[in-house]
Structure formats: structure tokens, C-alpha cells
Amino acid sequence: MLSQKMEQALNQQLNAELYSAYLYLSMAAYYSSINLNGFANWMTVQNLEETMHGMKFYKYINERGGRIKLEQIETPPHTWSSPLEVFEETLKHEEKVTGLINNLVDLAIAERDHAANAFLQWFIIEQVEEEASANEIIQNLKLAGNDPHALFMLDRELGTRVFTPPAAGE
Ligand SMILES: [Fe+2]
Ligand SMILES: [Fe+2]
Image: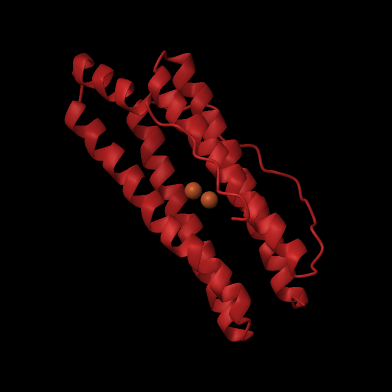
């Protein structure tokens, strides 16, 4: 059984993951509005990944006999000043989420909830990847600078990203 504190913390993270999904969907819409459809594609895939993260928490709370409590999802920002600013905000957001996951692990350790700790390790690894990919795109955008051709090539590349659904049981 989950402790009440852990149940509440996992529910908060479920909300945070769904907010992430909402944020990236808003970013996808921004990119579509400036005709960067490859960037928009990357963000819609990111949206699906975050929804999947949310569902991992949802399933885990259920599995441990906890009770899901859905809370209001905060309104994400609606517009940005440049394609680069969007990814700078993405990185900042992912760094914040990394902190949230670390806090959850701290709680699991404090409560000697080894199962929750093991469950959370997937997210520890995932956050390293999330930060690295946002960082890489920031570097690419900085290299592209004001060169429309370079931006076009990057847009094409990001347009190839596809969502891989988790394997059954994952
Ligand atoms: Fe996530
Ligand atoms: Fe993320």
C-alpha cells in the first residue's frame, strides 16, 4: 500500500506530466502558426510522450492500491518570441521536472518505499535524455542563427521524429 504522502506526491506528478503534455501541445501550435511544421511535429510527439509519462503514474498509483485524483491542469503559455526561445523554455521546464522526480525519489527513500524508488528510476534515466535532446536542439538553433536554409534543414530533420508507443505491459 502507498502511504498517503506518497499517493499525494505521485498524483501531483501525474498532474505535472499532463501539464508537460499541455505545454508541448501549445508549443506545437506556436510552431504551426509560424509554418515550422517539422518543429511542430517534434512537439506533438513530445506531447504524446508526456501523456504516456502521465499514464505510467496513473497505472502505478492504481497498481499500488492508491486512488487517482485528477486536478486542474494549469494553462500553458501561448506564444513565444522565437523558435529558439521555445526550446530554451523546454530545457528549463525539463530541468524543473528533473527536480520533481528527484524529490519523489528522496521521498521514496525517506519512506523506505523501495518499490516506488525502483519505479521512479525509469524517470531518472528519461530525464537525462529529455534534457540532452532539448540541449542539442538549442545548440542546433544557435548554429543556424538567422540562416533560413539551416533552419529549413533542421525543421526537416525534426519532422522525421515519430512516437514509439511503449511495449505491452510497460
Ligand atoms: Fe515527462
Ligand atoms: Fe519531459
